[in-house]
Image (cartoon, rainbow, N blue to C red):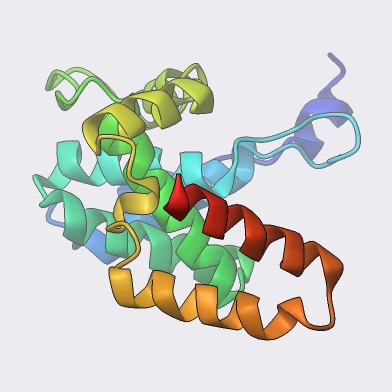
Length: 192
């Protein structure tokens, strides 16, 4: 590759700029800068990792480097990624939830093995690569099994909620033939 092309490739910031006793936020900002330097510049030709996967990788990185508790590391990772790439609050909420699912149901549960010889850049890239191979379909399957099929971890509708929905359906049955058919199907189900 010619030197001119190499000069255009963004470089990750040196870790020396972050003190050995860096706070979680400082280390998260450094890691975000590394992830930003590694993001493809032409989004049409190359797809980068999702925000949720980056949050999960950054969370594991903070857990490993600074022994941060997972929830605190995830909160800082979400905040720093949101600030760096100007994500909307709704996007942050969705991606943080997905990152938590990746960590809880996709990652093997063990933090990466501590190696003093491993450079932070290499560790971060290893974590990103490890999370990149996790399939979201597998995560959903494991999560559904762990939560016994309850969607989103929410409890099933209460009897009062069901009664309210049936009342609304009966009110609509006078004007909507599809609702009338549904009410009749419910009557038959209860009678039979």
